[in-house]
Image (spheres, rainbow, N blue to C red):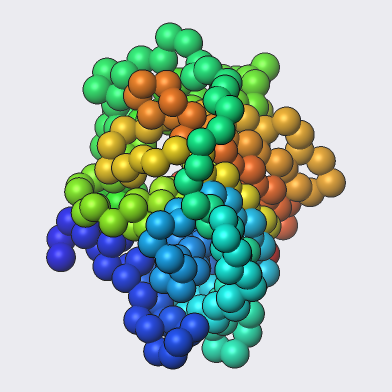
Length: 305
């Protein structure tokens, strides 16, 4: 498979090795730790495989406990906490080499009618077709794409386009608000299984959310002065969607203090319907050694070391 979207679908296709136990692949990559969105997406697949198909997930709450090792399989153990008339609850523990690296609680709800309201999408957002890809923006600034970033761009399962231009120097970030917005969609079709789309968007939700924490501190691309890692992650799914169609991920950071930063995100479709709400807290520590080079998406995710 050469299409990154196909590779993502394959990554989310877990092997069932017992009634409530599943095994997921972890690609052998050059990253220091497994991307947190991968672990969250696979854990949600494991939970969803043990529920009735008429109950889509409506929320998840997760903790990244230890960094996962690339190239080593991850085992997902599902506990069937509750099967009620309207709600189903599952708890998932991710284990790698005998150590728990992640846990997740997910709730599934049978659809029913109810009251309707939502916060509107931000105004005057340019459509994704009018915005450059991340690779094009980096290429335009640097006059080319470094080999490591070129490899990253070719294996990315999502097309990401920043609504606001990237800032490249300390002078450009002066006075910047802790807000960011990106258009995203899978780079190819993901099929028609709603669970795959939900888990793919869960994967994507961890890719850029902590950008909002960094924006007032340092340029997003270039030498990084902080170690960052996802600590916990929560999502609420409001409406059906397809992750291979454009969605706007509007992100903000209300606070960073005590070595941690909080980020919130709202995901809208092109018609302005609020699809998903996301909250995440991340570790934010100054480097004790030399700053790292340009970071691929997700390298900062996956639990504190």
